[in-house]
Image (cartoon, rainbow, N blue to C red; front, side, top):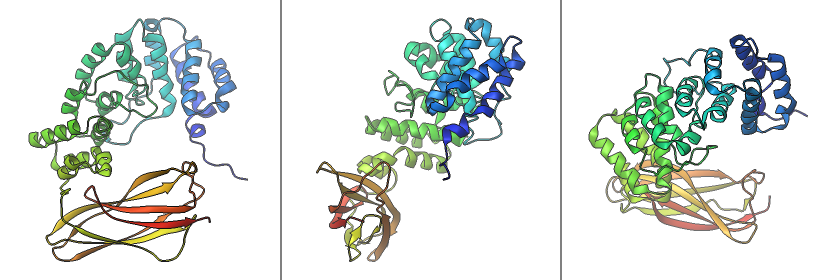
Length: 374
């Protein structure tokens, strides 16, 4: 029986470990490449992805146990060339260099923060150091934010991205940071006009994180940036839509207005669910018709309310379509939504369910349907 794809084995395996050992072996005469490989591989297969990063860093510390100022030249000599500076997006680098950031945290967080930041500046040009910078933000916030003022103008877009990504309030896999949500905003004010999508996507994701607690703050900031006009209009429109995606789903009026959708638009909506039983592992098929007296841009979502095994219900918002309702005419939208019974994150339960249509953030139509076992 064929085994499924394993991301952790693709990113961290014997070949990758051998490559890393070779870099350090070439940089230091007393680095035991064979011992390092043996130690790493003794536990690597049993570990999950994030734990593999920490374990490889621990094994490096066992080999390079001297103070960071003595080890820094070896670390620098072991680094491969920086990532291609001519690219502008989706170039994270090789995950095998992620443990080097954990190494710097362990060796330099307490006693050598300045040197550690120097090294992270170099390392992030080989693999993003967004996780490694966060312990320094917690222990040395003023020092890191001051350094980030310089990094925001760095020639490498990888370093510039670290400023935004490393300070995100809800960074996936990242250690929580104690920064006030507003503290990094002056840095984002500079970075929002960056020419690299790798950076502007991070800025948009950072803003989307902030919307979870202060949505109006994000809307106001985007409005300020639009008035400044420092970013190209198409890129700023893309950033705005990406940053406000969570607010759009929740029907935030300010977010919808920024994207050109009037939350108070007068739109008549009718909803029809395809006749017949809807079964688990089948698909829900429905049609909604929108009519307006005047030409009306619309952003249409649909909300499914699911029965849960504990007898309660939960809802989830899905994107349907963006469009324009012509004056006096009808815009028709059809959808087929698969209802898979074997999803790993969600269990479908037979019973009465509810479908709602949301237009420009406002619920406009609803219809229930029975879901039976597949």
